[in-house]
Amino acid sequence: MFAISPTDKNWFDFLKNEGLNSYVNFWTPTPWNVKNLKAGNRLYFMLKSPIRKIGGFGEFVEYKNLTATEAWNEYGYRNGRTNKHSFITSIQEYIDKNSHNFGGRQININTYEIGCIILKNCEYWEESNYVNSNDYNISFPNQIVKIKYFLEYDPFLHIQHFRDDFNLVSEPRIDKPSITNSRDGQGEFKGKILRAYDNRCTISGEIIPELLEAAHIQEYRNKSSNHVQNGLLLRIDLHKLYDSGLIYIDEYYTVHVSHQISSSHYRQYHGKLINLPSQLCDYPSITALIQRKSQFRN
Image 1 (cartoon, rainbow, N blue to C red):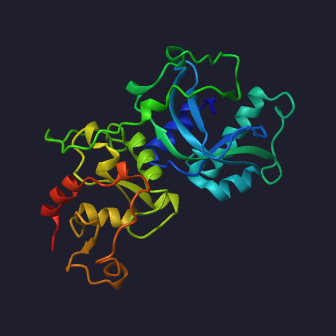
Image 2: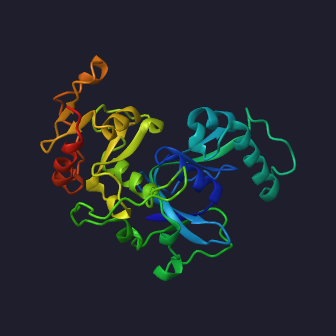
Image 3: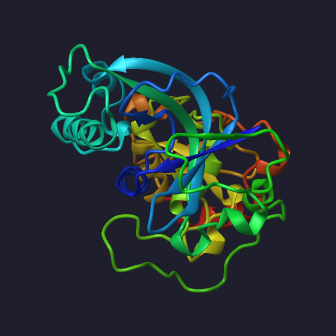
């Protein structure tokens, strides 16, 4: 089973640009009391008019009703807003516009409850990859304002699974001239890496979503670099050290820490085997790992 729900583009873009792909709150301004979704079911993001295309998906974790304050305290930026005030304002605007029962009166942020659909391993696709559901014989009328469930085979599954082995990219690096989200496909790449590594840093085991980043083994050249076999899930500081050549993972999946790092906090990882994906087809590319060695500052 899978589901589709209308999705706010601002929520989508914020999470994509901030690299927040797991344990995000697909919040609803009034409780929806979702019961049909099961753990792992995909919820596809139907970006609202005028786009009206699917821009990605998340995997269902759980549903719960929380007060606005509780939701902000638990999920923070993962609510898709820059601060608590913006979050509360968005809730107020939605209920004023759409709710006959709650609209027109100021909510009490400590008692008013919203619906919280918690998702992990979200993939935020590039605009060029947005999908028209009608092209896949999936009907999603404009009149649907909440969620629609589908019991049939998910026709979008094959879009996400590319199982050819990774080959090193020979083309020169291409970056967009923007400060955030400058790499094509990064929002999709991170979702795949989170899924492969079960939302845990491959070196440290860290699970705090805000601290996890998808690292490229061979440095990013173009969107072909965004292959799961060319990725590692690393805690933000370990990612920085890896990109700086101060940490290296060899073809036997063993961590090497440069002698330039004396801190025991990092030296504890020297000689450690990384935590590998559960699926062999997601293992890091041996070729890419060997190629990376030349950047190691031993």
